[in-house]
Length: 294
Image 1 (cartoon, rainbow, N blue to C red):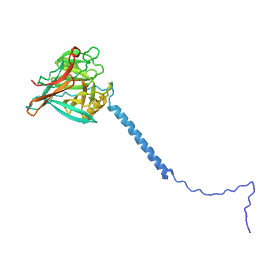
Image 2 (image 1 turned 90 degrees about the vertical axis):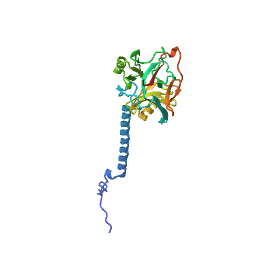
Image 3 (image 1 turned 120 degrees about the horizontal axis):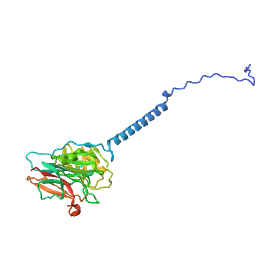
Image 4 (image 1 turned 120 degrees about the vertical axis):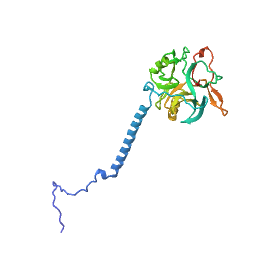
């Protein structure tokens, strides 16, 4: 006999079927995959933001450079040697450079053209820029204690020569300017390129041959680029070279300069670059040079 449950049309039957338990989220593969992706993105974002903040803090922008000065740098000395220059070539960041290190020579400034026939001069490089409008020296300039020009403009970098020692720095105002006047010293201004080992960006653009006065490994050297470079690439190369402080010197293929190296027989041999500036319009052309001790 067949039996049927009697269920009327207005009744329903509830079947109690126990559902299989769901696995918790932490035991599902897609949960851990998503967690790994989120963590990776968070790490990238955090490091990216911190790197950007660090780069901003370590790369001074125009008008934001802190006022700092180097310690006085005395001339390089080698006992029982004449005055001469050591030249060496290197390359940093694909920027070819030549370094000139004066030995047994004292720095000073001069207005006018130095003579290669003067064997007491072992290195001469154009220093402060000349204004295009009136042909005057741009920025403050002190020559043997005499004020030749006053004004900083946008060039907060400076070089002070006091008692034969050189100090480089970045400051809108510095008491070394007054000290140069009081003590018969020298002072001029130029664009700062490196401050405390950090390169400084300058607004002027374009490429040309560059030159700089640098404090490197506790000594003062002149560095010139052998190719046309931008301010940015040149300054960055100097910083990566290990330069602590650097200010710009007059560059371009026309900027004149010369140096004397020691030859095998002990004498010095002169080499020059650029073009000698003559004529009334160049009466304020000026140089930083190193001369043999008296």
